[in-house]
Length: 529
Ligand code: GDP
Image 1 (spheres, rainbow, N blue to C red):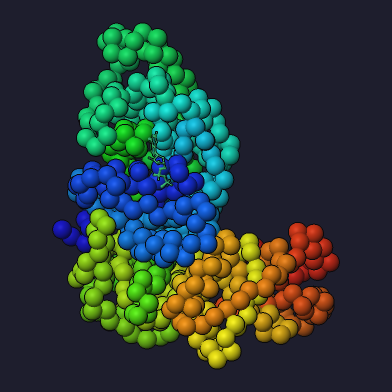
Image 2 (image 1 turned 180 degrees about the horizontal axis):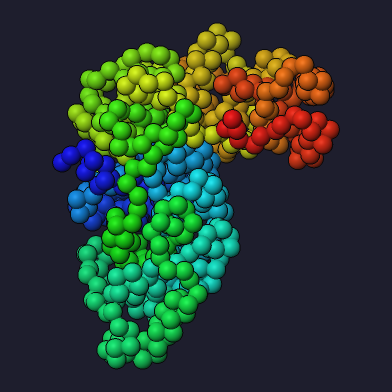
């Protein structure tokens, strides 16, 4: 296969959803089509059970599982599919945001009964801002749920999307008879017992055919005819270009648990979803078809075994062919590095590979050299963009609880922050360290890991911060900026990259600051240049 063919056949995507909507179940069924796993239950569910927040074993288990499910790859109809795992739990949202920088498209899973839930809203917003192509899968049609049209409205309104149904349910819950595949003009009947088998739909390109009445009953047949007509009047036709540019989102219905509607989703997906896309670097746009290898680190995972402190850095290949034992430039530290055992991922396993192509994810053993966002090239000074930090929601001072181990503490903190577990701020005034996280769970993870991996102990102290605002650096002679720095001295800190951050204690403070110092520009993500 040629290099260009290798690129054209890759589909790298993430599945996003609110916990419990059915992401794990859908992933499992997708893998089934690739013949990658034989039975259900093989994809580990990596969600944290309710009430487990203080259970450290659970955290450990969680970390192990997320390594295992970080990337799931399989071949379907000659396409190489890479599914990147995106934790649904809100405390791990940062991790998901970062993973979204490495996908070329996403599938959004929505529970038919619950509709659009908060975590879905947040994640879709990030995809919308980045114009990532999205497909929507409305799941659990075997259960009673919301009316399909109401749900489409809700998706449009709450998620700010423009949808076009590609399939439509016939009945729901107890009365669920099947799905009409508008895209392929096929009827799929639901029998409820084909949980793992793969069923083909029957061609049905003319809904006025009276046979429909015999198959699903007159009433359901008439309703379907009306609904399909309404759909063709109300919703825009599917245009691939619009889907690819993020302005149109096709919707599918089904039941992941019953493996129903999943094949239709996958078949459409491999046809319409984008192959590896060009990616913006600070210097220029890098096309996947360029011959020279470029890639970036989007995730770092610590080893489960505390005796081996090496980590696995996940690299998304943007262009060129990544080769084992080839020297690559680690742009941030200016060093050439070779990798003798890069891992590729297949189904739920990882194995050493000689070559990887754009769209693929390579796992590299790292002893602490990589940071999230680092770029690898064949020599060019490139820095890929697009891994912003958002303001954390929780802030605590971190104190050293074992003065004999301060070196270990700082090393541990440094490495954990490189992994993107949390954000570290250093107060200008007194050098105290503040850890910002998305969820309270992270504080326990950090404390536990510092102790077990670095032999350091820490304690926390609450700090009342509402939001971290990144401050655009200004001409130091600017009086307003000087005044701002003098007045707000106690609330100023540096993030890990040395950028100036204002830790505001309330929304009111932010507004007051903005009106008092209009030339001081505050930003709510770290990426504003
Ligand atoms: P995740 O948290 O999004 O990964 O959700 P899971 O895949 O773990 O699913 C959550 C629960 O919903 C599990 O108990 C699944 O068995 C169930 N579930 C998933 N898909 C369906 C479906 O199509 N119908 C029904 N009735 N239940 C489903």
